[in-house]
Amino acid sequence: MTLLRPRGRWLALLTLVLLGVSTNADAKTAEELTVAIDTIWVLITASLVFFMNLGFGLVESGFCRAKNTVNILSKNFVVFAISCLAFYLFGWGLMFGNGSGWLGTEGLLMLGGTDNSPATGDAYSGAYTAIAWTGIPLLAKFFFQLVFAGTAATIVSGAVAERIKYVSFIIFSFLLVAFVYPVTGHWIWGGGWLAGAGFWDFAGSTVVHSVGGWAALTGTLILGPRLGKYSPNGTVNPILPHSMTSGFIGCLVLWLGWFGFNPGSTMTADPAAISHVFMTTNSAAFMGLLSATTLNWLWDGKPDLGMSVNGCLAGLVAITAPCAFVTVNASLIIGLLAGLIVVGAVKLLDALKIDDPVGAIPVHLFNGTFGTLCVGLFAVDKITGAATGNGLFNGGGMTLLIAQLEGIAAVGVYTLVLSAIFWFAIKAVVGLRVSKEEEEEGLDFGEHGQSAYSGFNTLQV
Image 1 (tube, helix red, strand yellow):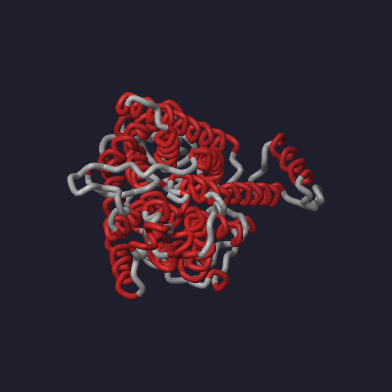
Image 2 (cartoon, rainbow, N blue to C red):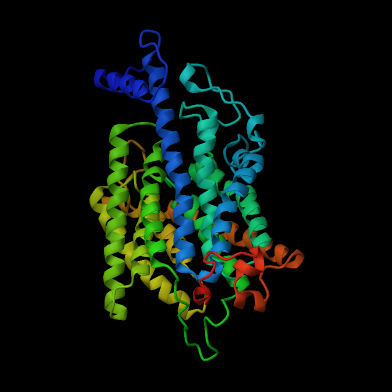
């Protein structure tokens, strides 16, 4: 039995008492106390990730027009519910169930699987061997992974905002979480072939953010831009956000939630690892904010708050894969570059006439890809315990970087192809885009028969 250090044992006992957990210190083993603390840690951080749904809703609705606010808030509300159902029925088993290197085949209905916790000292014989390394209860593992799955679907919402049919978005979200996200997730986190090939993604720059970004890009291309966004002569017509206050608050909510997203991915209350991930996460966030603000200021002549928000989020997305594998100094560089990338990507999409109302593709796809590459560039072997090997800039050669490139390409191709199939199938059956009249009037009235700002008709622009 592995014993906690004396200070750790007393801290564990004190924490349990403060949180109201009934325990008899003489009867509990140190290992059982460790599992209890780990479980509390995972559920608290999972709750922070769940809270990010508020942040996504505020950023997306604030960055779009007032006449679509109800629609956007409703999409961000229902997408988590539909993700829960999809992940429960199919996603969890496909992602973490025992099976082949390509997908899980056991435990497809979540409660149909079993989980003999390694904490009991018994040999593991459950349906989810890939996630048996953490001894917390099965339901805690499921809930933590569930909130990540919901995040991937939410990313799509912002890129297709202000012109997609409500029912079409719901259908696509279910299919994404049921059959796209978990398959690529199995390759990486479920003991699949990419994990075997040496690919690393600590908290989801690729597993979550790039998958959401690829799906968003596909949907945006198929939907086309919003009416009036681009003139026939190629001029970009800015469609102004209706509430930067909402966007600002939403960004801070997401920044807070990321302290659950990244540190919680330890899935164990390891003080050194948690502290390290907190620092790298925060460092990349503030550097992304500063670099995006500065570059956009130089580019356009004035600092744009919306770009500052996306710079912060870009830094957070980029550090999500390497947060436990790189030094704090490296995280500063990663965040700085992420902020520059997001500004350039926003300009690039406009040049290509790809209309992304909130910058979801520059934030999540461009920087999810960049952050994944950063593992191959900046990784320090076993800096928090994981044997990643060293990245290119730390004398490790090209091995890790090549593995990261292979993973990026494989996930990108699979997600693009399957997402396109789903988008086109939905378009053929129920349609994707609202009518011209409904788009001009606003989706709040056309899709919901409501207004977010009743009585303030001047806002309906």
